[in-house]
Image (cartoon, rainbow, N blue to C red; front, side, top):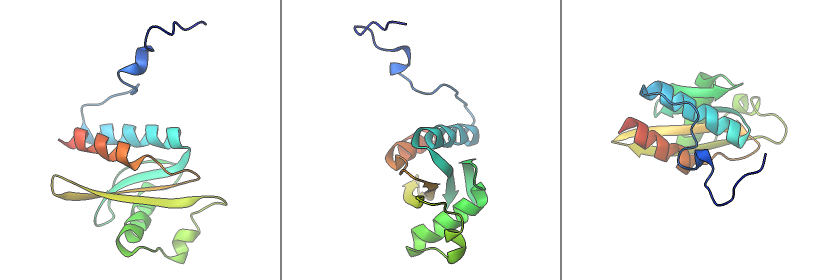
Length: 127
């Protein structure tokens, strides 16, 4: 197949393949795409209490949300959390406030997810 370089690719205006008008589903789809793009073993979005709102990957979203929330709030995590990591992996966390509500993004993998992209999309979805 030969691509015409003078024309933008069909997906240039919108990279999403699957959409949903239901916020919880839209966030789950966002996290799934982020996990695939960043080769993450698990990713979760939670509230400040560590309750998973959505997640994707091979790691239980509830466990990852609790671990990530603990790390985001205290700056460290327990030895139990270390057991979730495989060789070469790290726990990545980021926090944001959307319309007065705090959200925490937690991910485990070998590369850091684009948290700014995820949070911008979460803001669009929840607004």
